[in-house]
Image (cartoon, rainbow, N blue to C red):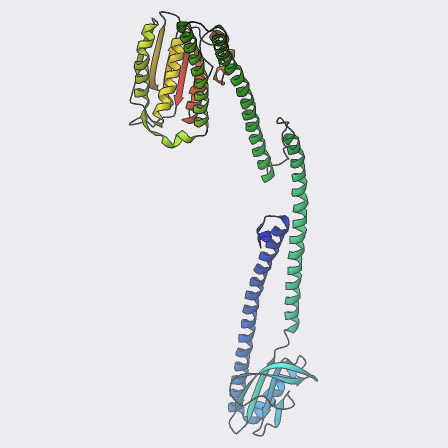
Length: 459
C-alpha cells in the first residue's frame, strides 16, 4: 500500500486509469439504466394501448371485426419483422387469429405484464406479454419481442469495452512517456548536481526551455545554490577573518605570559602585564560575543520577541547615553527627533544598532567635530534613524564592503575594533525588514537606518 501511495509515473497512470474507468462505468451505468427504463416503459405502454384498441374493436365490431383487425395488424404491419405478437383464443386457449401458433403454457390469464419465451420464426425468443380476457370467454394476448434490441446492446457493450481499452492504453502510454521525459530531466539534474557535490559551487542547473513546472523547480534550485554559495563564501571569509583577528590578541597574550615566565618581573610590572593579558582575553571574548549575537539575529529567533517600540525614544536615549563620551573627546553631539515613530521591533537590538553607529561616529571623528543624531519619518512612510558625522568618511568603493563581517577600511586600521560594528547594524536592520544606507555627509559619513514603521496617525 505504501508503494502505491508514492508519487511515480506508474502510480499516476494507475490512478488515471482507475479514475477514468470509474467515470466511464458511472456514465455507462446511468445511460444503461435510463435506456432500459425508457425502452421498458415504452414497451409496456405500447402493449396496454394495443390491448385497449383491440378490445374497443371487439366491443364495436364483434368477433369478425376483431379477427380482421388482428390479421391486418400482424400481416401487413408487423408480419415480416415479427416484433409484434398478437393472439386471439377461445376459452380453451385454442388459437382463432394472430401470429402465435399456440397459447404459451407459462402465461397465465392475469391482466398484467408477463415475461415468457415463445417460438418465433422457428427459434426461441424472449417476449413480454399482456393477457386480457374478453366478453364471451375469449382471450386476447398482445406482446413485443424483447430481443430486437440485442444487437444494440451488444454494440453498446462493445463500444464500452473499446472505450475502456483506449483509456487504459492512453493512460499506460502517457505514463511511459511522462516517465521517460521526467527521467531524462532528472538525469540532467543529477549530472549537474554531481559537479556541485564534488565542490564546484559555481555550477548551476541548465534551465529547460518553456515555463513549465520543471522550469520553476530549476529556477528555485539555482536560487538556493546562489544562496548556498554566498553563505559558504561568507563562512569562508568569516573563518579567515576570525583566524586573522584572533591571532593578534592571542599572540600578544602568549608573548605577555611568556615574558612573565622568563623575566619574572617585579609585582607592579607583572600586574600591569596581567591587566594587558586580561584586555587581550576580553577582546577575544568580545569577538565571539558579537559573532554569537549576529548568529542569533540571523536565525530570526529574536523576531518572536518583537514589541511596540517608539524609534524616536530609542534614538534620543542612545544620543543621551553617548553624550558624556562625546564631550570627553571634545565633540558636539546634537539630537533632533520628530516622534512618535511607532514600529514593531526588538528595543535592545535597535538601541545597540544606534549605539554602534554613534560609537563609530565618535571613534572616527576628529576633535571639535560635530555629530548629529536624528529620527523622522521619510516621504515613503518609512522610519529613518540617522547618525551623521563630519569625520573622514568612507570612500564610495568601500561602502558596500564595510558591511561585511571583519572588513576594515584603510582609514580604520589604527583604530581599535574588529570590523563587526556596521555588519551588526546591517543585520539588525535586515531582521526588522529594513536596511542600513551609507552616504557621504560632505564631509564625513551619513549612516541611515531605514525601517518599516506603522502608519502615521491620520495617514
